[in-house]
Length: 538
Image (cartoon, rainbow, N blue to C red; front, side, top):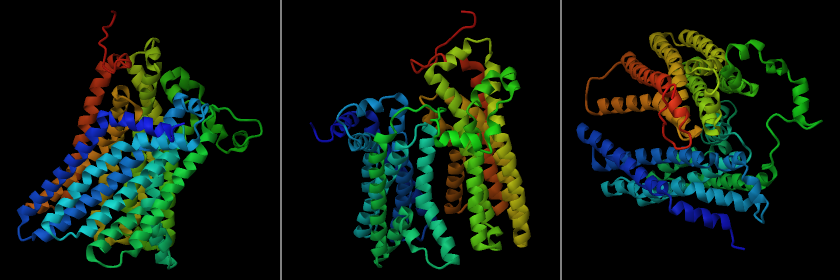
């Protein structure tokens, strides 16, 4: 038998995939675009030496590459094993002589080729600042090794979460949460503990972000780089730990047990018997009569607590910070950061839930069956809106109440910055409401038209959440570097608010018009990938 047969087969397939080649081209093109943009900004300022320009350019490119490795690496492997479990093909692999590591390494090879090729395309661009001076070759090689190690860590973290997950959304969310907790949560927790208790170096070392940015400083200045290599070794060890756990867990979790079945005497049955939330499982009888689509979207009661769980986790982080730091935790910018995290978690959940219903029903054909019923298109859309309202009206109201309490507490703590705190918090609360409406409509449209749920989720968050921030940052940096008129703090917040409102208005208007006019066309085009024109009465 061939050693690692799935790896050999998947590598042959991936080598012929167009996405593999376009990933290299796209990554190199994006890095070159960023490089020329930074150089254009520096040429407009004047008085900056080529050595300083090269050093700044390298730091910008390296930092963007690091976050690319974390996000893209985790995304590519987050659903590779759970997708096989949903399709029912994972059990067929284990009916052969294949073992757990054969399947895990095969899927890792299949999904990681594009990410590895993209990183290899970024390394030559990272080396270009060497020609400008200010960057040593040891720094380039050290950062390249750290990026490769970070990508391996993110890929294996996604494999581990995918091995224990079945739902696509839970797999992606779990992967991003695990990576964020290790890369960002551990340094924050270490800083809080060191502030109060005095020693938390071990938590710093476990974070790939700490090791990477420490390497930028240590390798660039020639100072001791031992902590950098220690952090790389720990991160590498964590990656192999995740990979080993995936190989051990996967052969034990591939069997189908059903989502709602509970074995007699098992922990599921005991939880259902004494859970304080058991009364919430009773669906109101009037929901089915009012709108069957709302009842259909809300029939799984576990999804009702997704947004509340995100708010509870962010609130627990706030309470930990308040306990460790004290009243200084109420001083800016901590309340603003907490507001952004709170709103980000809520919008993340809303975007996924808005896409999920139509995306899953379109893939399974249930949407076509739904259109064959007496329900009209406006009733179907209103039913999905009603389901989103039932799930997110309460968490959104709780988030707004938390924002008001934070605003009052922060203004009492820092009276000299009352106006700034009020402007930021008020703008954030307004954007939460506007973004929620845009995410709901655009999510339904992308769920209906995108190739799969993951793509619909990413497109929705990109157009509503990420693009306004990118436009705002690019405009701000360009205006500051070109010597244009400087806006005060309130003016900058108003510009950010205006960009966000315009983006939301465009997304909401287009999605509303297309959903109302082309719903049946796209609902019937699931097999061909294109909209099929359907005439009423024909």
